[in-house]
Length: 580
Image (cartoon, rainbow, N blue to C red):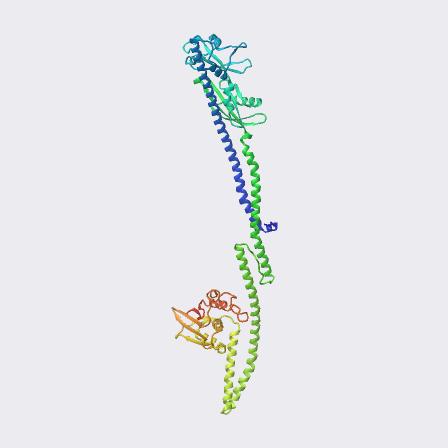
């Protein structure tokens, strides 16, 4: 499609374009804004839920590993009891190797202390609370915390050799937290894990950089519930965080730890970043598409309008018959067809008006000729009457009388022609259809005789009068008779018959003009009253006769009906309201 900006010159084009833009861009922009904030809220919510679920999974995994350490320590204690009762030293190799993977040897003043020496450490070396002692008497493992030389928390796992008598000794091992923190390291991509002591909120483990860990510790000093979410930031990055506290009292007699799972907001909003880039591209494409579609639609609408406007200007300049060519497949194409038809009819009408003007001029000339003929004709008539006074009886007098009758007949023809030819004011009054039909017949008798047409006139007795204009009705009847005569072309001379009949029915007066001519085809019959419609050549008809006839009858409040059959004939029936 060739885009032409001149298509936007009209107000209609600009209005359509603005409508396209508003209808397309306002919903698109509103949808984009709503989608943006909705997606952002969804990402926030999903991120919080996902972090919360992951923190729960990590806490469960850490808890399970601690319980596994408890189980392995119980196995070690049972093995020690067995070997002690049989006066054996050491542990089985396989058990010692397994325990070494989970626990680190405890040191005392820089020396490694084995379990056998541990058994002889006095109870006072570890200051247990009454609650912790009660926990040990239940045969459970105890998670014991003591400060180290570098001020970091130091955890031991403790179990009594004999729960019924703590004096017999306890087993103490350091926990190898690399095994415990493996559960924390198995986190989702782009997430970081931090573990705090649930009692003192000291840092136990973190995958965050040092500066970020410090910022997180400052934020987490606020009171925390059992689980929840919060936001925090370091110098460069904003984070979402989900935390969960899991207690260790029931198994290890320790308050518990806090698992904090964090994710950078930039990672959460990464899909939004893509969306923020894609959306303007989509918006630009939508704008371009709307612009092209609107331009195409505007061109499809305004170009035919401009074409038709220019065509009307040609008609206004007198270029009748000007045609347009519009191929749009819509109403504009139908309008162009109707315009071309109208232009053709205007051209034909112009030609007919010229012809009518000529006929009018000829009518005026004919009226002058009639006037000029009547003057010598009056003189001839007067001289004939004077000659008759003096003429003796005989052949000469008979000839004079014959000449007088001929002059009277010629004078009557001229009078009828003048009364029919001159346009006079319409004068409505009571009329007898019989009289009007008789006058038309007298005027057209010679023409009918020349065409070898036989005319029959039938009048109903006591036919009521109608209200009408004599001259208008004469024109109606004469037009119908002329059309009937034209229908006899190609028909044998002895078979040409026109029947004019008047009658009454149901309080109305009917005038029927019937011929046995060629008839009118059905497709033509629908247009016989249309102006300028004719099947005759331009030398015979203008296509206005029946249209004028219909107009005259409309003024008389009369209707007309036509029935025709090809090869049989045509019947025109006029229905007049009778004079009440």
